[in-house]
Length: 141
Image (cartoon, rainbow, N blue to C red; front, side, top):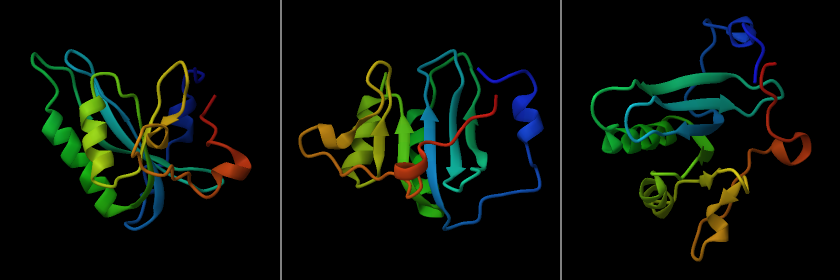
């Protein structure tokens, strides 16, 4: 867990990620009563993380079709090298996106990462170019 204030100290509201940039997208989806979030991160030596979309808790279920569409739009905007997501309650959406050729990487504990290539007919895993040598980006804290 990050130290209190670590994210605020690392924030740079003046920086944005240009269209067409190589990125990784991460998605954490809820079913209802919890926040669902879609973020994007550059694959630089010092990654920049930005919010794509946020669905706040409400009385009903998260709009699954809207979430799927936001992921597709992110893939059109940037060069998405992977979509990291926990498949719990979102397996069908992730299978659908993977079937469309999007670079889905299922992440769940235990056994992270579990990519689509481990399933019959799955896509080839697509790691950001820097990760094989330096590993995933460090998080604040």
